Length: 177
Image (cartoon, rainbow, N blue to C red; front, side, top):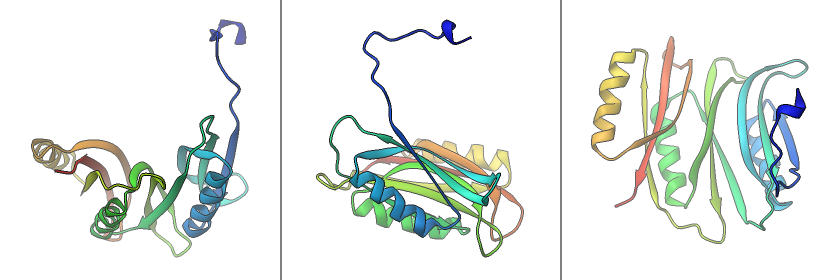
């Protein structure tokens, strides 16, 4: 029951905006429009929706503090391409915010990564590594190596990749040296 939920003494009302589309380019524009209105990224999920078929759904939350966030969406079914795109975005001061997998309009599944940056402070501070494999034992080995190099896992998805078969895709980041 709702009465069992504790009420925080100074809890403030929250305002949300739900964005849903089957095109990542449209989602990036909608996220940046919402950011200009004071919203920040909260969550993402890809999958089948009741009316839209396969869509990416993003929840944006009104930020009580003024911010100058901007967003970049990266979508590909090739992990090598995703790693290059994430590193290029990181060079521009973008940081990993979230990831999902959803079916693209062209068939197959794409890994979608959301990157965000503070336009007032676009300093590059992180490096990214993608680990993609269909075997959990290989994932263990590669993540151990990444951890030894200072990388911390920030997200993981499972999806069909361009090479065929289901792959675990883990994204890790570390501070730039």
